[in-house]
Image (tube, rainbow, N blue to C red; front, side, top):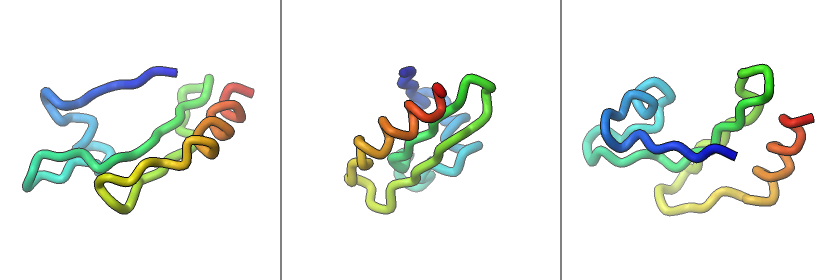
Length: 66
């Protein structure tokens, strides 16, 4: 598991559509990248303070690891 932050330059947030420019907030989201370097799962949370379904995220991460 690798957790990253884009708070300094917002490059990732801009490229992946998670930056809320007016407030410089980042929309909570989960990206899972498989061993092959390709995205296998993306979840954009609809509400700023909402938490993802961690059970689902863990299951998807396990699938990505194969």
